[in-house]
Image (tube, rainbow, N blue to C red):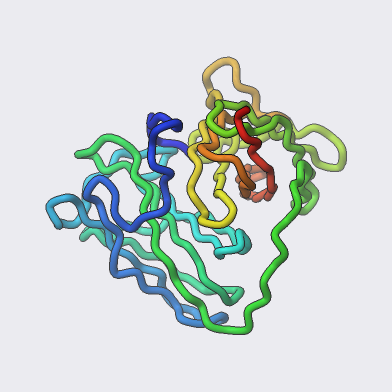
Length: 251
């Protein structure tokens, strides 16, 4: 997911702090246990301590909220409601226990560049951890098969192409979603560092086709395993394909 123009070689990896550029996330509340209906809320404040109320839309939204368990499972990409006083909220229900990371990804209008803030929520219940997945280049989501092409090298820009098929037939009817034909989030295994990923092209630019291929530019800051989550939209429904890939050292 990308909204900024930071140099990947020198920038601090986003998504590892509750404060950045003077902006902070606080007052995070959510249901405390699995199966309980409730509301997930949080508040954003700026360098002056006042609520953040002015945003510059990025990928068609003022704010993107990524929620994922610490082992990379239970990924959700949602768009809460701006309550107008710096607070954001949405109805919420946890389906699995564990420790979760929340990533608030937004562009404060006064700053004009992307900020990613994080917080942690613990969810009570019987924890069923998953094994860290092996590297995978094929994901199945319902009737869809998504294939990942390309490789990652630490500190180097790389193109990743994801190809969507349904029943073995290339899908050429991808629908615009968040300003592109797909939206890709990448998280570093372990600390869940948040990798900026840039979509290549956009609907209506005269050259980007609605499938089957969706291409992104990624620049992993370090070697190691990354979890990739592709959101794509077909027939009005958003689907999420998940992958694990290893970024190799830059020799």
